[in-house]
Length: 116
Image 1 (cartoon, rainbow, N blue to C red):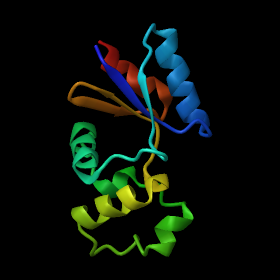
Image 2 (image 1 turned 60 degrees about the vertical axis):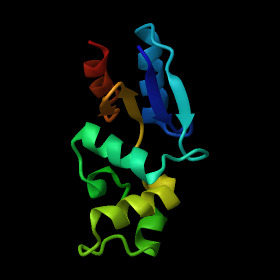
Image 3 (image 1 turned 180 degrees about the vertical axis):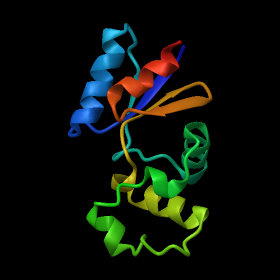
């Protein structure tokens, strides 16, 4: 079973999610997504696995959100995904992936559903 976490070590929820996985005996593949962001195709797959729309996964409080004019409701899926790829700080974290499933670790316990 391969488990991967899109992780930001500066984020308390991300650190707590990683610790929770390890407490359950799982040593995930840790992707520091700010350094190695997902490409558009991967982010699209992640969104489908999460059953979320791009805007649902965006950190709207980040300065890049306002600077890029991402509150524009006419922006389509492709444009929003492109913005997250270009500015990965906009991607909500942590995201845990297992096979074709995903969970957002907010709260960290959400990821436990993937461990079944």
